[in-house]
Each structure stands twice: as C-alpha cells, then as structure tokens.
Picture 1 (tube, rainbow, N blue to C red):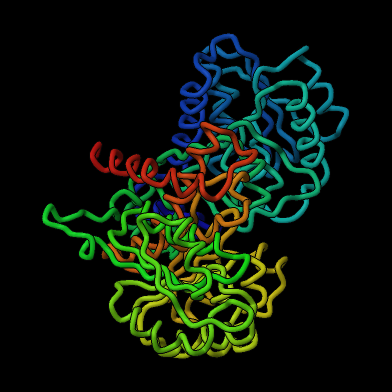
Picture 2: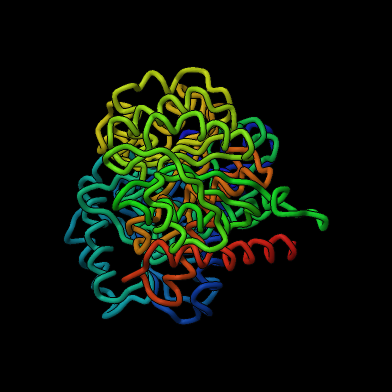
Length: 525
C-alpha cells in the first residue's frame, strides 16, 4: 500500500481531475460519503445522534460540508460551523456549501471564540464531533479561530464526545507526524486514496486513533505514474513474501544460518538470535561463540548447534577466530553477526575484518554495527555479498553523525539516504521500524507495541531476518517481512499476556503463530 506525502496526494488529485477520470466535485462527494460510511461501520446507525461538524474554508472544509449533508440524510441531528472567512470558500467546497443551503441545513459562520462557544453549547452533549478544519497541506501551528476550534475539539473529547478527523487530525503534520502545541486527538481518522506518512509516524500516530482509508476513485494511471518510493507493510503484502517449502526439503535446504557473537555476560543475545532463526523457519542454525561459553550455550540451546571459537582474555572473540569463522560462513546460506559480540577492541576489529572478507549474505546488528563507529566509510565500500544493517536510533546516530532527534524527525528519508550510501538494506528500528533498500525504496512497518521495548528484542529480529533470507527471500523482502512478523509476534504476546513484562524470548516463541497468521492470510486470498 502506498504511503503518501501531502505533495504526492495533491499530484494524484490534480492528475485525476486533469485526465477527466473524475471531477473535483465527484472526489469530494466520495470522500464525504466514505467518511460517513466509515462512521456507520464502526459505530452503527447514526439515526438521531447529535453531530457537530467544524469546517475550515478550504477543501477539508468542503469534505466536511458533504459529511454534514450525508449525516443529515442518515437521520443525524447535525450542526455545522464554518470557522474562518466564508468569502474564502472556493470551487468544489463552495458548491457543497451551497448544497447545504439547498437541503436547508444552516451553517453558522464562526469568527470568534465566543461564537464558537455558543455553537458548542447548543447541545448539552454531542455524540460526535467532526474535525474538517485543515487538511493534509496544512503546516505549522493552527492560528486564530482554527486554534480555538482545535481547543474546542480537545475539550469535547475529554467530555466523552467521539472525534472524527477528516483526512488528518488538525495540528498533525501529514509528512513528518510532528504535532502542533495543540492538536486534535481523534477516535477515528478517515483518509482518502492512501494513508499519509504522518498517520504512522510518531508523535502524530498517537493522535490518529483508528484509521480507515476510503477509495475515492483516483485515476490508476496517476497512481502508477506517481511511483512513490515509500509503502506501508500490509498483511496481504507480507503474506505474499512467505517462502514455500519444498515437500522434499531437508534441514540444510530449508535454510542454514550461522550466528556469530557472544561474550561473557552477553550469551543471552546470541541465544535469542539463534532461537528466533529456528522459530521463523530456518532448518539448520549454528552458533559461533567464544570457546569458554560453549557449555553455557549448550545449556541454553537445544536444536541449534554450537561452534567453539578462539577467544581473548576478556572471553570475547579473538582475531584468531577470523579464518575459522570465514570457513564456517562459507558453508552457510546467511550469516548474522553482532549479537552479544561486546565492545572489546579485538572483537570489534575481528568484526570489521570479517565483514570485509565475508562473501555470504550478511545481517549486521548490535556490536557488529558498533564496530564501524570509528570506521564509518568502510560501510560504504562495495560489499562482497548482500548486507542488511539493523540499527536502532542510537546506533544510527553513531554511524551517520546525525543526532537522535534528527533521525526521529526524518526516519523514513534518512533510512533511504543511508541505504543508498551504504548500498545495503537498512532496517531502522523503532516506532515505526523503517526498512529501506539501496534503490531508494522504503517500507514502514505498522505492527508491534510498546511492550517490545525490552532487552533482546533486536536480537530476535536479527535472527528472523537471517532466517528468511536463508529460506530464499531477497534481502529487502526478508527485512520487511521480518520486521512485520516480529511485530506481529509481539502483538500476539501483548494480546495474551499484556505488554507489561513482555520479554524477548516471548517474541521468539510467538513467531510460529505469527507466521501461521500470514499463511492463513495468503490462503484466504
């Protein structure tokens, strides 16, 4: 599914109208009718319910005028306020304002806070309030009477009124998800044609509520021509990526993963990555770790095989492990490097040398990434095999020299930029996780929950991605599917045990159920 910017949405609207595929009036009518349909699907009949519709003077307000008329047709008790100068209402919005007069639904001009207060006080309680103040093109802080409208909607929300946002809650930036000092907090947001980036980027995502996307009949040729590089992961799209296992498969043909890392005090990270690789379908998983940790890992792991590697005095991997690791890697389909590796200087140097010489597909995480903090340019050098890098925001900041705040504010496009620079797939972990490819494409992952902010969750993701790559999925697809299935597994655990106390091992154990859910999605259609 496309994930659009405000500019891309404007281009689609314009192209649809200019091609003659649909008029602006038709698009606005479909948007308004679709919003009312979405309300009825979610909340049931609107007959006799009290609805306040607050409209601005632009096209978002025009959608609001259509919504008000459609609500009246459903038997709702509707009051409409026009916040701003009526003389600024133009084109399709003006036509729909006139249609309200034709059906004798009065519109109250609101030019002051007192006029707005009087309209709101017209009912003791409103069942719904519709935010049709500003659309996706709005920028900055709402001002004047629009700001008063935002405040009124916030107060209605606090009093129990359900708030419905048209396209985007007022005060939320459509592209970045940034919020104004005061923004509308919606129970339901109904958007048109495709979701916008701001629906899924925090902090705006917390203000959207439930999200429904209404098909308003955008010209398919315009969609194909727009070719936006950013998409939203969906269950059907991810299900289509699932590997199909040959009935004649054996453990090696089902995917052979080598997981490298571990050090004293950090064996859990390595074990979690290995366990996740098995739980997401790899047929054969080997764990290469410092020799003195062998007995500990043998206790933690059952199905996974362990390889003793030379270690240093700090009980982390020594440079002497380089050749044995390269030999083991040559027999594997995919290598995952970094879980529990440690910040030991010798181990970090080993990681850099291994990455430079490894010809197998490689997933690089945790201290495998931190090894390049002082050698950033090395990540941009041509790799011998495909690479997937899985940094969290702190690691991304150290690798790029950008601040954490800059990365959070622009996580989609920064992930895309650095994936191109490094010629690698970049999985920028967080809320939401963004997977970017070296071709400039990006996929935003909607699954997961705050309970997954727990030690070891990233190691589980590393194992999942490595496993899916070993089963034959291309690196970017494996990374997108891995992030989605990882989030689904976390959601399954949160739904049964709650998010409090959720641990990384729970996520790993829920992976088969998450993948089964995607199998069922694919089978259904």
